[in-house]
Image (cartoon, rainbow, N blue to C red):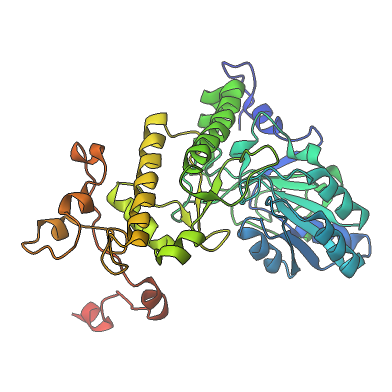
Length: 414
């Protein structure tokens, strides 16, 4: 990254540093728990092998801990979605000097800002452990908060989503790592390209010493063009959009978690379990029905089974958000139509979704609802319609019965 000034009179490295404390150092490589492990070993505390992970953490957290041979111990959350402080104290008391670290996502995948984040960090430090703050949701922090000030020792910044790299659907995951000064001597090095102030004995994390050359320029240009004020505005819009959607959807659905003042952070969890119990309509039915409206479903059944995790980010216009809200409100009414007996559990617009062009153009239509309801349940769909390419598939069967699509070896001989 070059140290030129942007139009906003702030350099690119300064923009990144603004989200961390001044004592943090940025390294462009995948997230690294190994520095914490080496730090403990250097102090002679080789017994520290437990990583505490809140139930609200991002799914990559336990995977990362397992990759460095740490044992995962889950910490419960309270009824507002925050880390349960009492359960954290109990887990620390139980495992004592085996606690190496706690990985916490802030704001969490429950869609709330952890109200006790500083107390959480203090408790772990008192036990001799380190705190890794997962920066998966940095798009709700840039310009308004600094993970280093929470008390964390390590953090990373996801470039995907927050810094303009595609998010989801197998998109590239990457982000700079930030560590406190006491962990700098234990960061990974590189045997081919020297990384300043690192030791080769610490090993190598990534084949490319500075990360992905195809990803970094995109984030660099994004930060350069946005500038300090633009990055802060993006954060504010992400939080505003999430709360606008949560407020509107709250008129039709139950929201699983909100903060003390009734607000969410960057996303909200719509709890579909009560509707499923009353009507038999599943979260998958609702996800597939959204395709008829032209929407790709939000994250389904993560981090809580039977929910939809809705995260509009800063990039959606109000018109688009209003269309999504209308779609969800229409779907809620269709669920009620099943509950009231207007539609049967077997034949309704949700259970049969998505409806393809082939379905609607077929000579025969055996459903109790019209073709128009199936394919154009909202007024805007009469002006522009994106047709689902296929009906629903049996996901479980596909997961359990893998089929090789490669041509047989004999065909190459020909």
